[in-house]
Each structure stands twice: as structure tokens, then as C-alpha cells.
Amino acid sequence: MITLLKTLARNLAYRPRGMTMGPQSAVYLPRWIVNPQRIDIGKNTQIMRHCRLEAYGTRNDQRLNGRISIGDDVYIGAYCMLASMNTIKIGDGCVISDNVYISDAAHGLNPDAGLIFQQPLESKGGIDIGKSCFIGLGSSILPGVSLGSHCVVGTRAVVTKSFPAYSMIVGNPARLVKRYDLGRREWVASSER
Image (cartoon, rainbow, N blue to C red):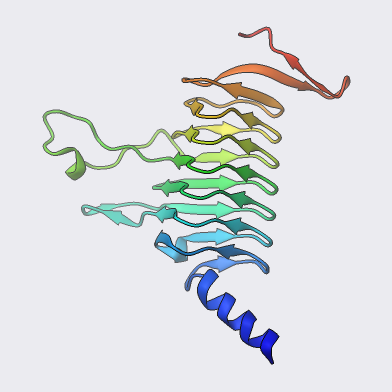
């Protein structure tokens, strides 16, 4: 009976209503969620405290189709923000450190169009993060970015363009510094520096 009560309490506290979630997944309190019905989370995924998950449907009369899809066995650290007007996909087995910003939306910045916050959102496309990627502390992943599987994003990197699988990227803007050599089974310096 006690186990059942603990399970019910956990489900009420850590499984937001309206969101599709696999078993053993949790979104810890406190949290901020916009349009939970547009968010899918796989099994055994943990989203830590103070995260924001925002899948926009409308904003200032602008019709949007924001979707967030998070795979199985994903860890998302505290104080992360995921904001989507298109799609954000995070593959199975990813680790996203604390204070990471992932958004496929940007504010309009036309000086002739009035207040910034009242301008329509803009986007260069959705975001797709492949399986088993590691995103370092305080990094930003911006609109239109695709990361192949097993990418490593260094601390505080600002990722403005896409990178293939097995890439190690650092800096602002992020640049390729190493690739994982499957034959040698080690990270090797990139000649593209």
C-alpha cells in the first residue's frame, strides 16, 4: 500500500498533466511548461528542477506549431530552457548539462516594426540532436542546427550551424576541434580548425 501511495504521489508531482511520457520518466519541480500536449518524452528520462519546456502554439496572434520530442534515457540538467516554434528533437541517451539553452525561435529585430517582444517570432528551422550527444554546461543550440549522434559540445559553446556525427565542438561560434576516429577508437584533432 505504501509503495502504491509513493507511486501515485510521484506521478502527480513529476509527471505533468497533458504531456506524453514513458515509464520511469520525471520532470522535477519547480518547472515551467507551455503546451504540455505538444511535448513527448520517452522512457527513463529525467528533467531536473527549474527547467522550462515551451512548445508554442500561438504568440501575439501568430500561429505556430511548436513540438518538443525527447527520447529515452535522456538526462536534462537544472535551469535548462527548450523553446520551440517548429521542432526540437533530442535523441536517446543524450546528456544535457545545467543551464543549457535550446531554441528554434528568435525574436524579430526589425527597428521599424515596433517593440521587439510584439514582433513575430522568426526561425531558421528546427533543431535535431542525435543519439548519445553530450551538451556542456551553459551551451546554446540555436535555430536550424542538427547534431549527428555522439557529438560533444563544450562548455558555454554557442552552436549556430550543424555538425556531423562524432564531432567535438567548442567556442562561440562553435567550431570543430576533434572527430572520433572509429578505426582508431579515439578522438583526433580536426584539420578544419
